[in-house]
Amino acid sequence: MTAWDYDLIIVGGGPAGLTAGLYAGRARLKTLLLEKLIHGGQVMTTDLVENYPGFPEGISGFELSDRMRRQAERFGLEFQNATVQGLKVGPPHELTLEDRELTAGALIIASGARYRRLGVPGEDELTGKGVSFCATCDGALYRDQEIAVVGGGDTALTDALFLTRFAAKIHLLHRRDAFRGAKILQERILAQEKVQIHWDTVVTAIQGTQAVEAVQLQNVKTGELASLPVTGVFIFVGVTPNTDWLQGRVPVDDGGFVFTDDHMATAIPGIFAAGDVRHKLLRQISTAVGDGATAAFAAENYLTGNH
Amino acid sequence: MAEPLQVSDADFEQEILKADLPAMVDFWAAWCGPCRAIAPVVEELARDYQGKVKVAKMNVDENAKTPAKYGIRAIPTLIIFKGGQVVEQITGAVSRNIIESALKKAL
Image 1 (cartoon, rainbow over the protein chains, first blue to last red):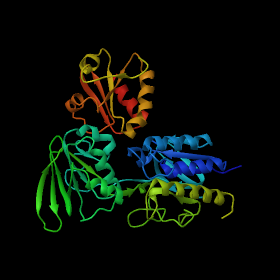
Image 2: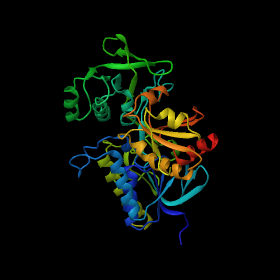
Image 3: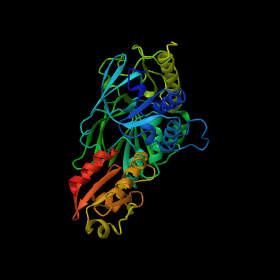
Image 4: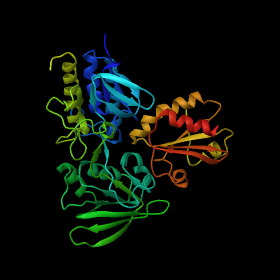
């Protein structure tokens, strides 16, 4: 006899949530995973995942997340499309969806992160009209064109390399004088003739009427201003967590990422967090998967009183 | 026409703009994960709306003219045409409900 709809509800269907679902299913917890859009999260937009062990030739982000979902479902994970709008701390913890409420004995926050925006004029207005946050989605539409990529981390470098398949020329705009991305990606970028690197350069505005026509640049060291005519701007400048729905009820850091201990427990008993949404050092599929397994195990212990 | 029809720049006018039925075209590419994610929904709708809506797919990697003509800069993009005119346009991976309500509006 339980006093809630589900033993465990997982919010978010990326690698962290799907792994938590796999472990919870095998623990025979009555588990529901809620995902607002499509399973996979940010992984879905990755052409080739090269740093997840077990796939020596790499695997597409779609294929990897599809496999994770099928594996979790095989062990009884229930999956629903829904957007969580609010949280009432219990126990039982209550989630507010668009059309109903759901209660759970334990909760795993795996709602991930989304690409950060630059916050410059023109960015919002021209999103989908030349401003893109997904190279694998939109790259093919920029065949033989001159485009810009903003950022200097793994995602920016990986996606700039992907875009060399299509674009005639890529301007890689980075605000520092060195990249943060993996050394192997830096080596590949430097070897690419199509890629011109603009160091110490920030975007101050994106211009265009119907579609992107140019970006305004500023050199942060010299202050020099420039205008660069491009038809597309791909922005990869880090991530911001999807934690608005927590409404401040779970402690987060200054950037909105959820604080947890080594057991993925938040400050609220029975509420755990896993994956990119956590305050952590490295946001990768491989670390999300570990978080998800730990969170599910810790939630099981919590529910059975072994904590 | 249970399966979505594959259309190209060459036959787009004949198959879509001059179609007797309202038509929904899914602009996609093989690299695009979100496109692959909504593909099953598009296939479902092709079956469920058989005889009411002509459902088609265009690969933007192989066809440049039509996406350019409709100003498509992001995929997945779904466009619903009626009598050769654009009546609805949805960009990004969205749930079946959103696509279906756009379809119903166009019918």
